[in-house]
Amino acid sequence: MGFTAQWQDWKTARERDLAEPHGWLALVSLDWLEDEPREYPGLPGRWWQDADAAHVDPQGAVLEHEGTALTGVHRFELVNSGPGTRVSSGDLEIEVARRGGYLIRVHDPKAEAVRAFRGVPSYEPQESWVLEGTYEPFDEPRPTTVGAVVAGLTHVYTAPGVVRFTHDGTEHTLTAFNGKKDGFSILFTDATSGVTTYAANRSLSVPEPDERGRVRLDFNRAVNLPCAFTEYATCPLPPEGNRLPFAVEAGEKIPHEAH
Image (tube, rainbow, N blue to C red; front, side):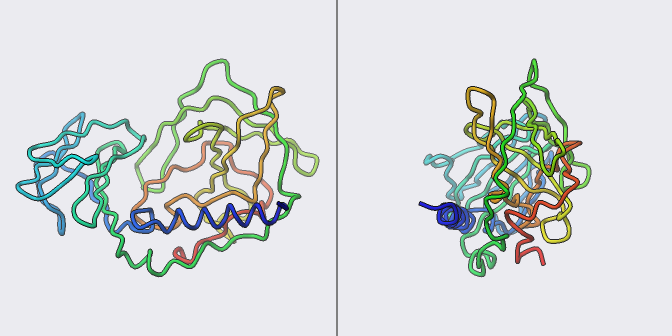
């Protein structure tokens, strides 16, 4: 299969994931939990947090978590800036996540953004934007604090090392975070950010390095984070130094939803 056909298959799968009934486009609300139990508009039960965990009291409503009905007060202790967990209520999925404090946000498959989704504008794929880099691990992984699209919020991620690469004769260095499954995730901005691409950030997945430390940087697969599609995301900003001084005219552009 040729380069363009492979990219098109990747893009089709990417857009299919985005349009999942309970995906990012399905978000319709975000609420930060308080210390006292309270109800939230349109949601069953009463929700609150303490210093360590989030809690829900179904109060007789039908709620499920990981396939088990919740019949009494349930506690969710999550990792800060880590994955959330979901509670089902009919067609809705209520995501519980920890971002400093705890939040709940509702994924509704009937959301207008799901129905109206028509793909993500992207640059045409070009093999010239597939670059070779070198991964250089730190002696010890470094906790790295970054800002967020939500004012006053920060995230802390583990940076195992940096990736160095050359573009137009100049060397550039990007801090890499651990990927969701393997490899690395690089958050970056460049000279297109806020012009043709989303201003706050884009993300590039980088496969594991080979035995010589070489990595493949395919900027044609640079993607928007959820915050480009919805106001109910709390996405991280790139770490200091991850702004490229040239225009990466590859990958996803500003989404229709952000216009």
